[in-house]
Length: 179
Image 1 (cartoon, one colour):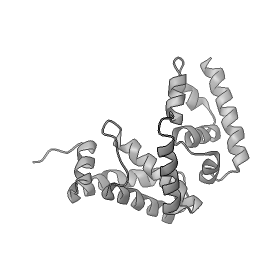
Image 2 (cartoon, rainbow, N blue to C red):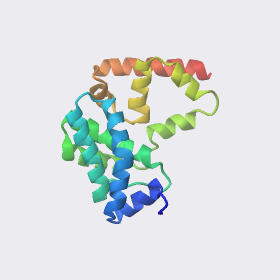
Image 3 (tube, rainbow, N blue to C red):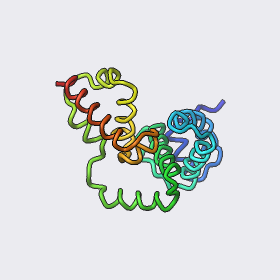
Image 4 (spheres, rainbow, N blue to C red):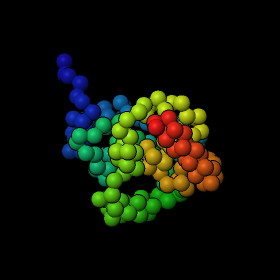
């Protein structure tokens, strides 16, 4: 009986053209990714298209994974970005623009890195769970997922001004809790 391969092993094998490894990776993560994306988008057709695009990018090798990173988190980031593109209607041209912008600003720390670097003490996880779901959703979209205010507004179905207000309130509450 063959041992179950790790996610990293499957991803490397799929990148090398191993169809069975790709199929196993798809079986492991497509249902999970679909469920997560459906939490962000009510249109099942859009979600199904985004999941297919995400795994197509994995198969073609257009989405690059860093060997030390978590495969599930990486797939989520790829899928979330494709969902925003689909909701904005940008498609491939928008992805190309985003890729070029990321390459240009590669030396800058990501939103996640800036948040994690600034939090040395305190119970961040506890403070986040005490936020209202609306404030937590805005923080997740803008900080964790790295979306712009406009992208978060599209994803959450609220006006950009509301995203800004909720983000401000969430940061204020976090500062108070972590002080």
